[in-house]
Length: 77
Image 1 (tube, rainbow, N blue to C red):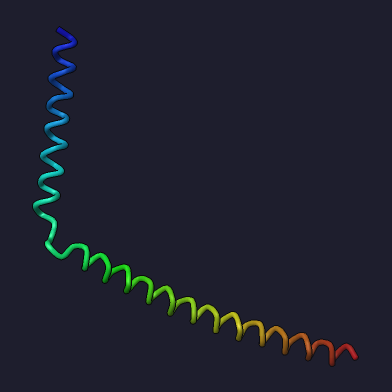
Image 2 (cartoon, rainbow, N blue to C red):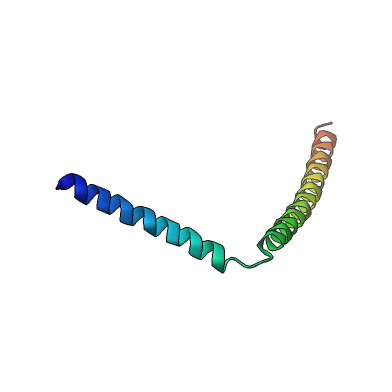
């Protein structure tokens, strides 16, 4: 009896997964690959821009620190 219940449970679970996969496939837009590529492209562009901003910020910070060190050395001398 327990074996029959287990088979019934797993049969229903498998049927549910198959139905879920079918619904996901049917409800997915036709151009989902193009949309995904576009989103990835936009994300990459944002990352590049943020990278440039970070690079500029680090350059400015380094330059400021370098100038501060020069002034400090002048004060010491």
